[in-house]
Image (cartoon, rainbow, N blue to C red):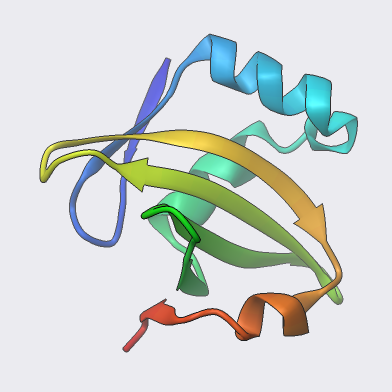
Length: 101
């Protein structure tokens, strides 16, 4: 299990079973393990999710973005829910921007 820090300084966990779930649901993510962690630590932007989660976004190729959905459970602890690739940046931009403000 790897742990990274969010922009809020919260430890965000990526347990093995979560990574397995992510790669089962989104097979294209298999080679992006470190990019997932990096996106939480160094996103280009963070949007608000629908149920108190954060969506960290980072461009990985021209017009291709990695989105990492995670939840900060407390000031010290959180976890990654899922991650996926998208080209639909406009859809993300409709959400409330949390960072940078």
